[in-house]
Amino acid sequence: MSTPIKAPIAAKELERDMALPLRLTLAALALATSLSAAPSVFGQGTNLTVSGLQQDTGAPVEVTADSLRVDQVAGSAVFTGNVLIVQGTMRLAAGEVHVAYAKAADGTADTGTIDSMTATGGVTLATATEAAEATEAVYSPQSAQLVMTGDVLLTQGGNSVSGQTLTIDLNTGAGQMDGRVRTVLQTGSRPTGGGN
Image 1: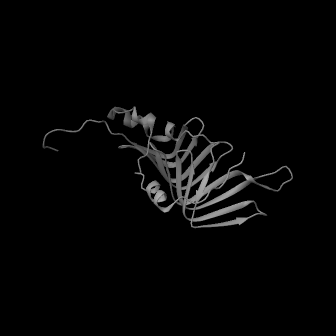
Image 2: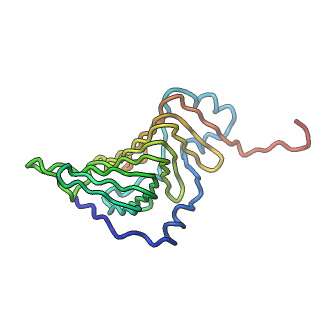
């Protein structure tokens, strides 16, 4: 599968994309709207449905950055400075992204096929309905798996879940949060009156 790198996005378009509100979505938790459900979602591992992050992983990957360094021998590329990766409706922003290319049958780098992309430095992932923040994200286009690690935060509207590792299958939208998982759910009801 070929994954071309396209020309940079215009500055105005980049600014618009980065201005997407950091609204993070959890379809499974949005259904759990009562306070009595809150204690049951705390734990060491929480399965999630993150349908807004379900993507066409065969779509082209567009990368925009301040600079690019390519190592043909090692089969890698490093994008640095204001990196924005776009695939379908998914956008990932980070300070730096390391791209490792797949190996061809003869052991040389197949620069037409991305094996993995590792983003570091203020990683933010967003779609029209969902987004997440983490210290690092590793995306493997061939397996359609995204693993975000380090102070991960995922929210939808007022609902949020945090942990240390979020693993998402982008083909199905299934995900799992691990590492001292904490969930905050909005019940939709607000207290009335003027008391505490």
